[in-house]
Image (cartoon, rainbow, N blue to C red):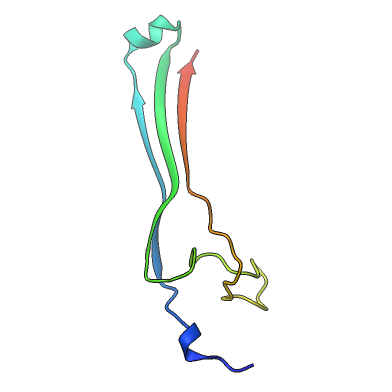
Length: 91
């Protein structure tokens, strides 16, 4: 099959892959739980992608790691965005 110019676009992108913030509470707060230390963390993954690509995600393709159809983005799903909250107590 021939390649049609109107279906080819730039796949350049920059992605904020992971961002995490952690706060460590003081010993007085940890003592309330009879712990040596406590922390709370907020973690985000795949938060934003800067691109002019018109598809879902320039990082995905229909063939995954197979080289036969690499760069073909029909019916692909984007990598999910996720946010997590973690609370840690060290005993």
